[in-house]
Length: 216
Image 1: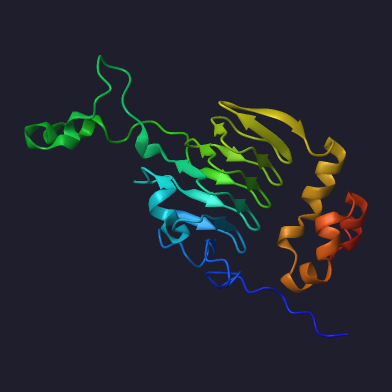
Image 2 (image 1 turned 60 degrees about the vertical axis):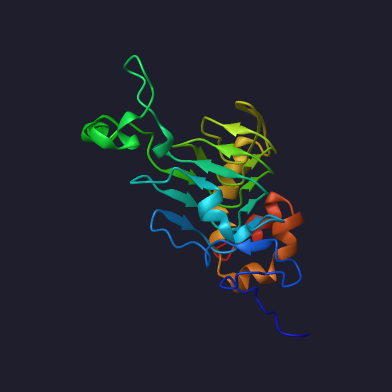
């Protein structure tokens, strides 16, 4: 039997004949973006422009945190807290950014309240054209339907869709979700994942738990 060779999480293009697919961990440079190994973005245009074209109004200090083994469809975007405008006065217009004497009032648009970091768990699938709003938390194993606008948190193993996105159903029951989270296959050593690809992709919850390195 030939030796098992894990995939390489450091390559930019995991499919050399498909330049539209990039791994994000070796691509991102912003200290405000954290991406786990093997998370990929698929775009027939320029997937390497992900930081500029898909993470919008990202001035900080809030972070975008994406877990391991996530799949992001074409045009999936993250709107960060820098997009916020004041709404407690008569006008929402950000006058100070226009320059001149108006810039003396920059304190009016800094430090606006936010919802904190935007966090995407492990093994999350975000469909084409989905928009994730600031401060949202998407749980492990969740699925976001194409074209959705995610304004609220999505639970672990939830399937959500629509504008605004609503929870459609859970992929598993509460007991099985607890077992899946305890097994946490995305944290297994990559060599162990390599030996159990078929179980991870098509096995039952029992199969996955039995395959866990610690027998979780």
